[in-house]
Image (cartoon, rainbow, N blue to C red; front, side):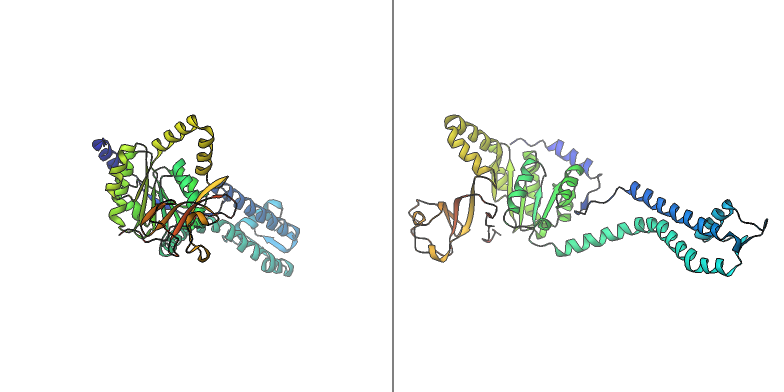
Length: 364
């Protein structure tokens, strides 16, 4: 495998200048400019209402300049009163005007201040609230799944692992593209913007406490570097990586990947199979498309199946997982099924069909 060492080093040096951060999924909120405009509109409504209340009782107010109160004076009084400026040149003198100020104008003043000051307070507390959410998220995150790369492969991988019943809160996406992370958070996943070949980026995704890591980068050399970094941080996690070229698969395994999927050769085999046997190619495509048609699933052996051969049970058994070995359905070493075995079967996909998660211990 030819690794462009100089290009990788230069790219990493440039990316050290880029700020990486964690983004958590959040509910869709209104645009900030629209929020400010709405608040200002409500403040203007409060100002106009106050001015007309004062003008309606203009006989109960005294203007030191000319003794009378017109509409302009009413707006002036409302402005200086709501803003708590209070020059004192216009004052309520009648009992009704003073009661109106106590029970009506004062609450409107409080509302006016809440509307305007609330925008500033919200901006000031947003950073604190976000830090609190991140700290709570980090403290609760355990045995999660980290997906490096939110392209076509990464999205499909997430869809498959979520079919096991894995909650979206247990998936963390790492990608250098801010747009990809925005798409991930919009789907309900936590995201980390940054280069996954750097240990500090992976640590922000809490890789050291992850149960499984899926590496679906666009380049094979990047996948190698991510695998090396991830394995160094977490010795016990299960790492599955995708590569384009089959010749690079051994290097991925040497770097610490437990399983390597070769996308180019798999696509080529499917193309060749479709040419030789369109029906067989259709079945294989049906198996690949999770959630429709046929699905391949892994499940434990139930008590009623113990002591039987793979051919004697109702499901179509492809392989038997016994310990750390994967045995074919016709392997003589299988014999009869044991309670600790797991079966890889082909079933008809239904809304309730789930791929059973791997509960075997990962290699240390």
